[in-house]
Length: 488
Ligand code: ADP
Ligand code: MG
Image (cartoon, rainbow, N blue to C red; front, side, top):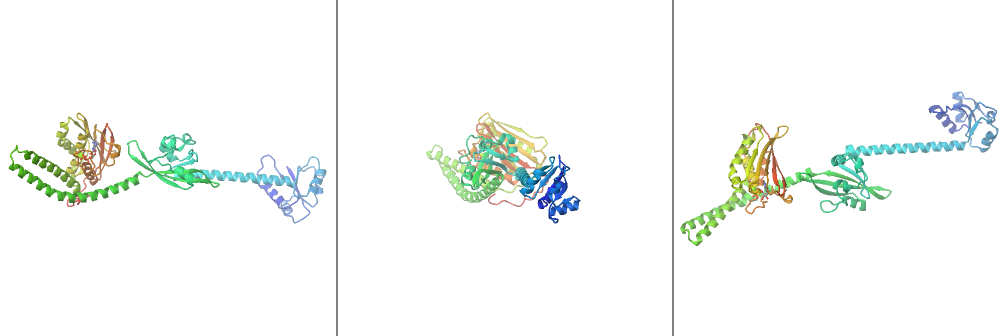
C-alpha cells in the first residue's frame, strides 16, 4: 500500500517508524511521499534520510494515481476538505482525527493487554505462594462461607479435588456440618474477622481415627476491597506437636515435684505405721481368739499392712533408680512376667496369650524394671477384664529393625475418653483399692529406656497399650553408680 503523508510533525515520525518496524500481516505500507512547507520538520528529515520524495505543497499530490492512501496529519480542515474534493478517485484519505482515534484505541487495547497480563502473573504468583511456599492449610472464604480458593496442602489432607470444594461452604468441607462452627472446641474465627475486619485466631481440637487429639491453630485475615470486608483468608496449622511437647514438659515438672513430695511423706508415714502394726500385734498376742477385741485388732493390722503397701509403691514411684542395663532378651522378660502374673489371671479364668516375634535381638535393658513395667500392664489388663476374657501380649520388630513394639491388649472394660490422658498421672485410679501409681511407674521406666508408651481403648471392647523400645545394642552400662534421687 503506497502512502503519502501530509504534515510532517512528530506524529508522522511515529507513523513512519511503525511502518518500518512492525511486521504487518495483510497490508504492506510503504511511504512514497511526504508534504510539509517547513523543510526542517522532523518527518521531512526522516524522509530525506530514507530517500522518500518530499514536497512543500500538498497540491502536488492531487494529480497522482499511484498513491493508495493519503494520511492527513496537519489537522487543518481546509486542507483535508480540499484534498478530499480534488484527489483522484482511486486514492483514499484519512484525517488526522481518524488517526488520533486509532492511536487511542491501540493504546487502550495495549493497556488492557498489559493489565490482564499483570493480573495473570499476580494470579500465578498467588497460586505458587498458596500451593508451594505456605506449608499451612489455606482457604479463601467469601462472606457467605463459600470457598473461593483452597491450597494443595488442604486438598491433599481432605483427599478432595479442587472442583469438589470450590463453591461449597467451609464448614461442610472441613467439619461435615451444615451450620457454621460454634461451641467450645469449634469457635468460628471467621465470623469475628468478617464483623470486625480484624485478624482473628483460635484453636480447634479434632480427634483422629485413633481417638488422639489433634490441635489446630486457625488464623483468619480479612480481605478488604474498596473499604468493605468481602471475605477472609483462613490459615490452619497443626500444632499438636508443640502442644504435646509443652504438655510433656509440664507433666515432667509435675512428676518431679510429686516425686519429691511422696518421698518425704512416705518416709514419715512408714515409721509410725510400723509402730501401729507391731503394737496391734503385741496387744493381740495377749488376747484369746474369742475375745471381742481380737477381731478388731486383726482389722487394724490388716489395714495398716494395706497402708504399708501403698507407701511402698509410693517409694517405688518416688525413688526410681536409673536403670542398670544389661544385654537381655525382651521375649524372655515377657515370658517371665506372664509366669509371675499367672496366678492372678488363672484366678479369674483369664487366658494370657503371647505371640512373640521369633527374631527379637538381645538389647540393653534393666530386666527388673522392664519386668515391673510389664507386670503393671498385665495386672491392669487382668483387673479390667471380666472372667473368661483374654489378655494378649505380642512383640514385633519395627521395620528398619531399630525398635521393638510390644502390645498388651485386653478384652476388658476399656477406658473412658476423658480419662485417657489422665491414666499415666500418679495417683489417678478408678479402683477402690488402687494406688494409681502402676502406669506412672511404667511410663517412667520406659522413659528411662528411651522408649514410649501409648494407649488405644474403646469402652466396652478393650484396651491396648503400645510400647516402643529402641534397640540399643552393646551400649555400656554407664548408670551403675547413679541414682535418680527423689523424683523424675
Ligand atoms: P491402679 O491400677 O492402681 O488404678 P494404674 O496407674 O495402674 O493404677 O492405672 C490407672 C487407671 O488406669 C486404672 O485405675 C484404670 O482406670 C485405668 N486402666 C489402666 N489399665 C487399664 C486397662 N487395661 N483397662 C481399663 N482401664 C485401665
Ligand atoms: Mg495398676
